[in-house]
Length: 140
Ligand SMILES: [Zn+2]
Image (cartoon, rainbow, N blue to C red; front, side, top):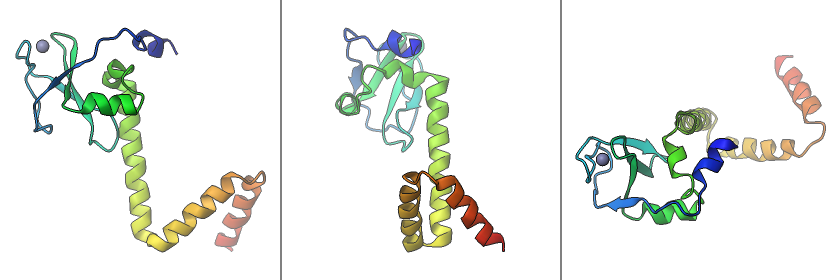
């Protein structure tokens, strides 16, 4: 992918880390004082970065660089600020919410069984036929 190649440079300098402990509110750029834009790195919202459009620089909370490295995301930091990345996170978050609603509706034990069945189904060459059969059973 072209976008990936552009950002995946080994020589990319490490982003600055700031001391901000409150990561919920927008922060001012420590360099130019402009309000920075917050981006989630992952759908769980526990990791994020701040981006200054003025300096075009990324600021991280303390320890975030280590996290990004451990996830292999440190060479894709600028990708996090793209609409495509953020859209994917929103999709992941709503998929997780759907799953959680489903889990609550059918109960944790049944949900576990469904997950097991789902994993098993993925490995069946005839899963399409199995699903059609099951759907028929349900409507009869
Ligand atoms: Zn700035």
